[in-house]
Length: 150
Image (cartoon, rainbow, N blue to C red; front, side, top):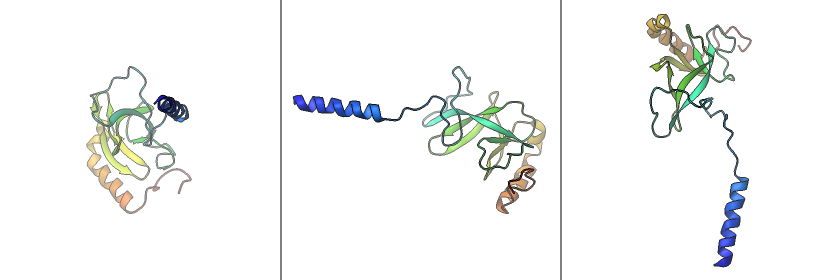
């Protein structure tokens, strides 16, 4: 019994020393960053879901359709470099919010989620969804990309 306690203590100590340490500013598998302390969130996300800050790639940016650049694609007027979205452990990223209001999701393209918070773009959201849907189905995700990624 005496050796069992020592062996158990040695195994626990070894496991804790060899376990990887998570860095506080680690980017998640969906590309989200941890929120800074004190950030206000619209509501409690619930089980296996947390709020994350995502980088914004704006319409007109050469990387808008670049699959290698992580972030939420935003069409229309938006003056911030990040957006608050929910991240679920199994489902991934869903539901982006700005100032407590949900952003309108336009599509999910091969290069990332496309949303808008601009009221004018929101008015034309059904037409934009159709265009983005056709673009995805036809494999034209680099159409009008404005970059050398074609």
